Length: 323
Image (tube, rainbow, N blue to C red; front, side, top):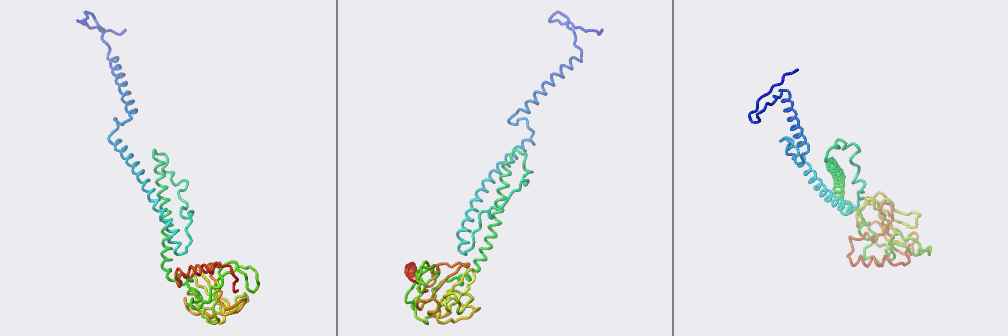
């Protein structure tokens, strides 16, 4: 049986038992444990990071700065996208139109970007969605810039050839105004003078005296010169390049040969009445990429606005053609 020790307390005038050291230390340990657990709970539940280390506080500030920078970057890329959209509209509707180039489709400009697993390494973070969005926008803009750069390279090339192209673009009347009797018939449905039925008249008829000079309306190479069983009698066909071709029908005399290079304004033949024709005239056609179009749109080089307006008015009249 263990011995118990007592001490006299003069204030209470009684004896008190002396506690053993093990109990004392146990009490101290339990008190310390409770205090420690309380501190840990406070650290874990603190919303303001009062108990974070200096390093942890620095990391938190860096994360907030990164988040702010990504947000600002996202806004800047939105502005860049607006500028790119404006450039795209100008490119398609102005630059490429001037040089008669096909516009670039939205599908080609947008292209594909961002594979399924491309941004997988960015997942699992608190700001993953923001970062992924910024990366996707950056890649999208990069793709569009590549397409736009290639487009401008093409436009520059077209611009260098513009002077050459303009020389090969039909731009004058095949018969000079001073030699004209009248503009007999225009492009559209007309009564054929020989067949006496309504047929599509694919060109314009310029009435003039037999022997009146007929001029090439643009630079090019003669691909046909002479007779052919197609109703045009003696006629000339010129390939101007860039998809343009012109035909001059019912000549009295042809002044060029097949394969010959000609310049705009050069005499290629003389007005006649050969083939299916009801009188001396020059039947004139313009073909673009193999399609017959209205020649009225190709007289901008030798007519005043008033003269052009009058010619356009006469061409619309549904009268009898001369061929």
